[in-house]
Image (tube, rainbow, N blue to C red; front, side, top):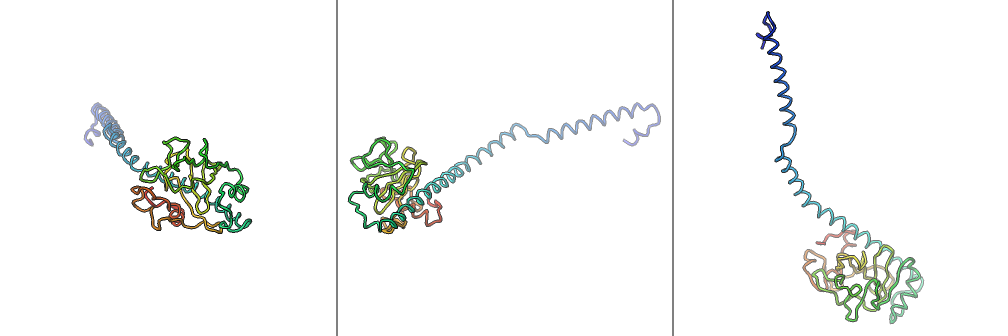
Length: 253
């Protein structure tokens, strides 16, 4: 290169060298630009990896969102019902002194005046009722078996949901059955599935002074690792477990 530049005459060879050098530089730039991009195969591989990662993570994100939404709804009903019972006890005395032979009258007298902005239903299974109870005590929704309430194992519930207690529906669509010792809650209403105990349907216990207390009717944890595998009776203590875990759903929801 040095010899070509120092040629004393003509300048022709220098011009030729300059043109060749320019072409070489341009070629280098083009190759660099190509190398900075991706081939079709590389792009497809990248998109495939992104798709796999999305398939693995998206269900987890959706489930976590649904869990959080469920907890928010449950906590809202829990707070409203708890405050209502405790206020009623302050006004009318302990719950066990109320005449529970007529649950509808108890509700209308002691609780309903303290529950503004709710829709009330009786236990006659009318269209639009919050918890609809058929003559066989099977909890269904407006005689539509697609919306039947079920245990985690998939069986339809025939008991122990109270069959003669009034129910209420909150403005956000959540429902609750009012009873002497328990409150049954459907956090998103019966129109919305899954209508499964421990997933969107929960039970909380009420003591004689109107306070919320743990509810484990079988004396054991039915919201453990095998929650989804259990059949009749499982999931009734899930609300208790959620509260004890600091308002978190830790079982296989």
